[in-house]
Length: 200
View 1 (tube, rainbow, N blue to C red):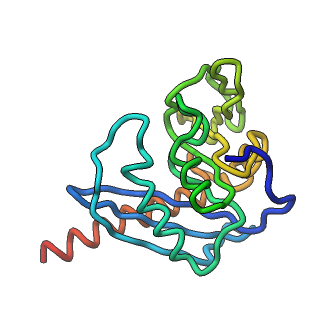
View 2 (tube, rainbow, N blue to C red):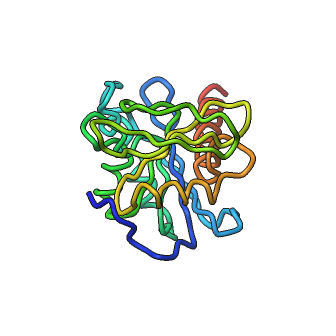
View 3 (cartoon, rainbow, N blue to C red):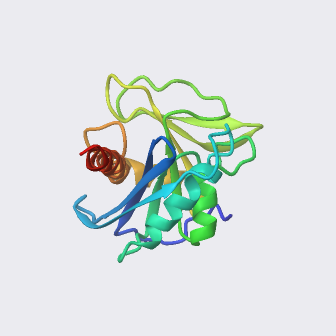
């Protein structure tokens, strides 16, 4: 795991997220350009091999996320993962594992942090540092007014400041950065469509 920016220029940004129903995980990945237009996407459905255990999210979601990203025709310059980066008690969350195994720059964005101290940002666009054991883990970012912050943390081949810049760059009018918001939406749609197909 390397916490330094791998590239000076990022032109494409990806997002990957999972949704669950019973024993199945529905995964979706998208890649957007600088205008936040989708230029590639991939999906997968697989069986869940391990129940959710706090702190061990990779073993539940990681294989599906990696398989889906590998199905993309256009690998992104950096991938935003719905999960923690180094803001993890072992300093290696889902985004870190995915980044190392894919050998790809990754950023973790989550709605909760598994560890660390921070001051709650109060204004839209404001960010505060997230620290644990005197180590900078990332940032709490209030992306939109009236919403709780998201937690931005480097996963692999990205610095903490680089991770924040990437998320700020692709955050539009929603709590989640656009590539991740689209990936989450498409994963949920895949789950719903699959459910309807089996029910008919």
